[in-house]
Length: 337
Image (cartoon, rainbow, N blue to C red; front, side, top):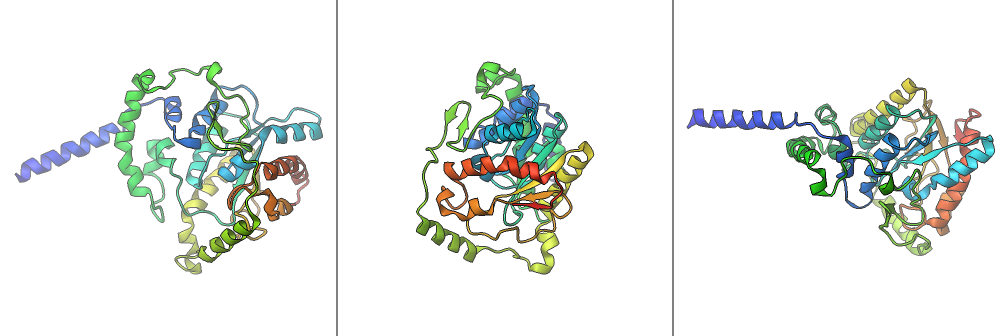
């Protein structure tokens, strides 16, 4: 029985290891994310790989940026100010997670020539990994991810064998799973997708219109509760380097790749309503690029849809302001308001 158990275990482990080697198509992988606004990953992949429209300025961030920045408005403003076309792509996707931001930036900068990368910054770097990391990362990305403190490290690795097997089958028979083997321009959402009025994916509107204003009293109460429950130093301030190791590790990788590719980096501060006028900890950003602030827009309750997101009115103001901020940031001021 002992020999049988050892043999069975060895066969199982070998099978799992071989499953990690199953190849798959990256386009199929991107399309296969079909949950809500996460399905923007398919469009992001198409924008990077199949759309020849230049990407001069790329926004990377969470739903704060996705719902708050109208790329077409920013593009028009920058083009008007510069006197030549400036192409903007809002590649933001919901939820926090610098590990996933790293994957997006790598995909972008390894395949496209980008002049400026605008990274969203909130009041503090999130310790949470992104839920899409394990679905989009290469096997090596998952295996080589930091262990401390990575709340998803074990679960991400455990998902890999079945993920590889599933993607391998879908690569062989994509049509059976509602996926496209090749890029179809007729099914493409276009070079720019505006999500400031409503979230749109594959030509479908997923949310109600955002042309509403949250009750200021409710907004203030939610902001106060958020502040009361905020825990910046769960391990103690002296262990910050450990507690925030994961986001800083991937932020450093993003910044290093941008430097290698000659890409300018700007930071756009889009916190939760009622948070400080700058991040609690500025050390990850100092000397890495200009920080762009829109204090007056963020301070006005009339610009908010909920505690985390601007409404259509706030997004319109932000999008109209950004061309000037991006233009002025090139003058060398470390912070622009």
